Image (cartoon, rainbow, N blue to C red; front, side, top):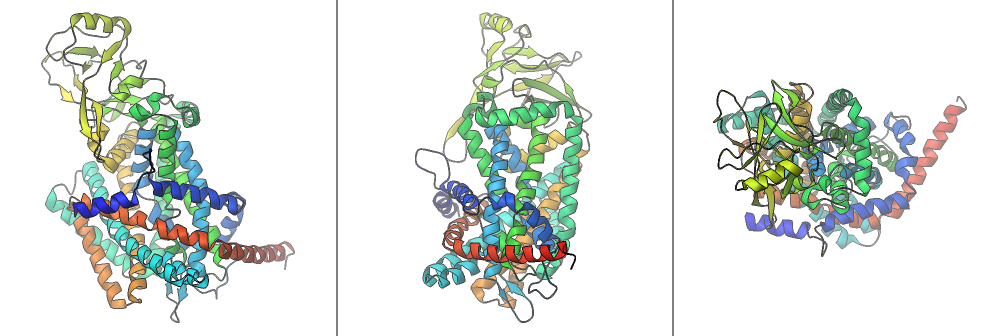
Length: 611
């Protein structure tokens, strides 16, 4: 499995020469910008029209389709508003600094046009059967749309690639990854379903819930998501607002930091790899990946809408990246920045002591937790740049203890927290540290997953106990050791916990709901892709649903590793055929947009005249 996953990953995530930027990311970003210009920034001009359309103003009861505009939007949102909105944003800021937030928002706006284009085509080339069932999505407009242009063979090849990749993405990124991370968060927060056997049990229970919904097809999925998506989004946003109100005094500084770091980020903002390019790349990456604009997946859900004007659903789809990226992702980002959690270097058992960056990006704080409440332990650190990079750190002058043991120089905190830095420093070096506050940190090498070796600081800490001077040293755990999404969820959880001790429970519920909604929507995406390949065979569709539920059970307890690497590659393999189709079919979208604008204008004029 590993050679296969590495091969696909290397092909799909091929990096632009002399950069570390995946070519697929560049293609998505450039396409979003081009489409926004081509349609004269319809993402901004048609926002009001989108709100009127989603309320059903321009629809008729007899229009073909299965679900309403709002249900289609909710279903598509349930597939995109997921763990990436929580964990992915935190990791993007941790790597690229607060400046990544601004570029993430920009890509969210540009992605609105990509979503408009592909969802218009999804409805234009969908197939509505006599019994009312609908088949649609990227594979259909690639096959039938390109056939209209005299490119039938190319269209069929691209459609098959798209469908196969969609099935792989549905079973992996849309299923096993979601349940795996949901189980980790729920078990850690509530201390339930812990251990391998319990993990299987958790997966089985969720599989039953998923199966109960997806057995009813798009109609049942839409009914669940139209209730679930508003609830989970509003709940999460309210929790974020409470955190922001608690840190109201830090919000202006945080906003200033986001804007400032987007254009001229300090080295501290991005750690050892900080800088404008890193902030730009991380922001674009999260903006593109969070809402799937350009991937073509959402067109599957939107194609089931009841409408006679394809562009009407394209306009509604504009709202999807706005809600997903501009609203939900931005709320997560603000919470991370204002609480100072955006640059946490390390922690003691996730609870006791941690180093973090302040919201103004100019100082490092040492904080501790006592019964769930965050307490400031150390004065703000006066130069965070080198500490973040893992080569040189700064501590307040005069705060170094005597060299009492072989563990090295100690930076003593006000409330008894002691940080051990760089073993082997001489007494002369200690005196220099006491004078100017500069100290060298111990570092270690670690693999980054791409074959390269990086360094990170090794920081030790202990809470000094007067009755026990030999209290043990605890190695602070760097976020790079937590790994990927789990580290990002932990980071966001700590931001919530610093305000109200039980807020991580709210986050855990949000994580579960986000994961659950993503799974039921992606089950439909995979089913539609398989139906395209098999001619809509109902027995095959039922078998797929059974396999999908089994993957929920497996994903909850298994170590996914190479399976997810392959799934991620297949997920983004949808991008290449989809973008080719979008460029070729742009004139079709333009004509459909004009038809809908005329239709909407006529209804608006009639309403204005009071007819």
